[in-house]
Amino acid sequence: QVQLVESGGGSVQAGGSLRLSCEVSGFTYNSYTMAWFRQAPGKGREGVAGLYTPGGSAHLADSVKGRFTISQDNARKTLYLQMNSLKPEDTAMYYCAASTFWVTSPLAAGSFRYWGQGTQVTVSS
Image 1: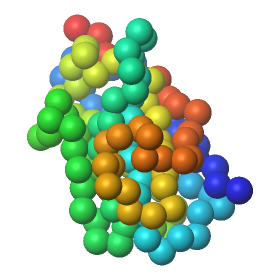
Image 2: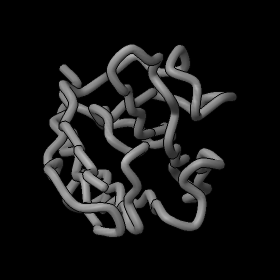
Image 3: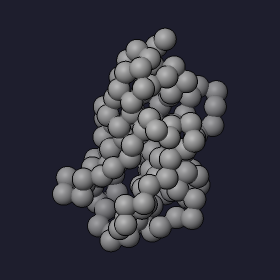
Image 4: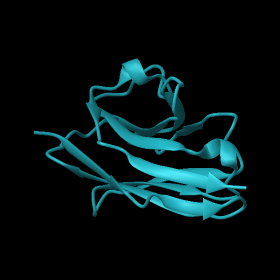
């Protein structure tokens, strides 16, 4: 059974950095897509960053380009989201998501079957 467990959230001041981690278990596919999403109170779930494997092609939302980086450590079966220059508008619950194949839209929530429970990121001004 596929399980995704996020960690690394917290509270930081604007301009600060955080690194989110998503540990994956029960996932043994050779070609897949993983992504990070976020959801602020009263808003829909927004795609932040997606990553294709193999190949390593990454897709980032315009709102985070130049500030966030998505990466993975295959040996540790962990997906990361490095977040720099954080802004108050980045405040949200952040979720890790996985699909067992390459999806057409890596920033669309409907593309993904497996989800983690989320980790909260709060950025104060």
